[in-house]
Length: 243
Image (cartoon, rainbow, N blue to C red; front, top):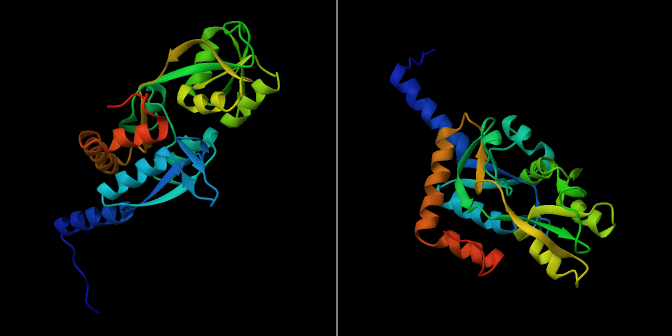
């Protein structure tokens, strides 16, 4: 039987090829419950702004995307555990999250959060405010002195306002605008907009710097040629913040 002798250089090259093979298919983790960022369409597929952004990033990076949905409250632990390779789920870049995972540069610029209520004149600093669990909005409610009532998904935060369980909800304004517009006056924006977070980026394991670099390069190219701005306007309207 012939024995295969591998030199250190050969082992290094094989390690590099194994890394490339491992990343030729990238599992993109998203929530699938935060339109228009990400949602499940009538065909049961992941859809929305982040689906189009993610597919374009993967195409430019010569990677194949596989989309995986995961509940928001466990989305970071399941990334770290290896259940998927990225998070692309409307996740704001924060120092606290960056202690656990890495982020690409932002693919959605810093934008406002906002309060929505069923009536005007609600007490935003002393009342009960709904927010999705584990979001920067939930942290802001606690810091503001109001009472926080958390929900696992964004639809439940809005439903709590409609049912009178809370005084208002705090969430990304771009998520709330179509809900308010479709409410027929039953819901309204109250108080001032709140600036939170450092934009939205893709989350990756700290052990995947090569993958992060590929994603960053694709995002940079999309910013430079206008592709990212076109997708922002398509999904969020002409008034949205662009690069």
